[in-house]
Amino acid sequence: MKTRLPAPPGMTWIDGATTAPRGFRAAGVRCGIKTKGPDLALLASMTEAVSCALFTTNAVKAAPVLVSMEHAASRQVRGFVANSGCANCATGERGLQDAYEMARLAAEGLGIPEDQWLVGSTGVIGTFLPMEKVRAGIDEAVESLSPEGGPDAARAIMTTDTRDKQVALEVEIGGRTVRIGGMAKGVGMIQPNVATMFAIMTTDAPLDPEALERCLRAAANRSFNCLTVDGDMSTNDTVALFANGAAGGDPLESHPDHLARFQAALEAVCVDLARQVARDGEGATKLVEVRVSGARTESDARALALAIANSNLVKTAFFGNDPNWGRILMAAGNPGIPLDLNRLRVTLAGHPVFEYGRPAGHDEAAVSRAMETEELLVTFEMQDGDAGVSAYTCDFSYDYVKINAEYRT
Image 1 (cartoon, rainbow, N blue to C red):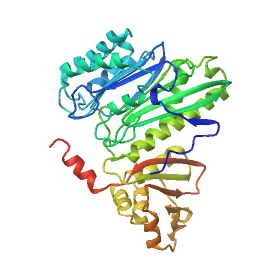
Image 2: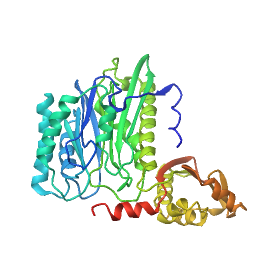
Image 3: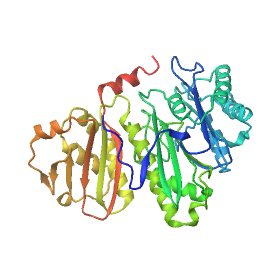
Image 4: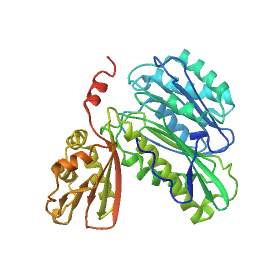
């Protein structure tokens, strides 16, 4: 399997996930919600922080999302408490009170106000949380918090994930070292629209809440909102960024070039997490990047990239290493964006398959062999403008059906 993309110039990938930035502590413990593995995560800034969070736009929202939306409005959140194994969704008033209690228990354990906690739950919809286990798990997680706990927290939020998803980056900004860390979970029920899973980021950079939100929204639009596994939007999606300013110095927004450098670093972190989610899609055998270029607008480019990335016919062809470029053209036509086939070029795994109104005259067997890879690049090259976007997805295998057919049985 390929390693992550190279860090942008002047930046370095480091270890530590969400606790790589100064002042953050985390823990991941097992409390018995799932049949095996850790299932309760805690993350907190040990000093005051500012925050921004994005949530699912699905009309069906889980209880923890409703509580988190309420708390996030202050932009002063500094902690995240989450369980896996139960989504606490469609659970009525009891579920809502359980979500509030998770925040209250974390608050009592660490002396951080209850309304400064985001709550997350992931797993099966329509079941109640076993709160006796959750209470014990939060107590244990409070005692286990450490600067090395980021990887443990990343493992504790996994559901059908086959691997944890974590990243950390270090960058020099204005003579100081700034770090950004992140963790994510999600392999199914992944559809781009504001937030697409759990993706929790931390930074020790000094920013005000407005600048932080602008940075997160911009980074999400180039990463999580360009991510899809199966086209189904979750009821529990949460993307959040906490900044505690522990790196010191003036707020980054007071120097536009400093803020731009942070923006580039944050986008690199978010893209890396999005790629990790796509690579681990349920039943996936390959990570697929659909790169659209030469579009009139970024919104057109995103719509085209996602139309291709979301097509089950395209994704099954990728699984079978079938260079069926006709399916790609079909999918690109679905959004209704005008396409001039005579000004269009499509490549698969580096091989042109369609060029300017006609087949490219390629060797199908050679292209098929080139598609036998763990990371597949598809390019859709237009000549209508300067806008471009990459969408991240995976192939659609037999195992996706098996995993989801047997999810509860």
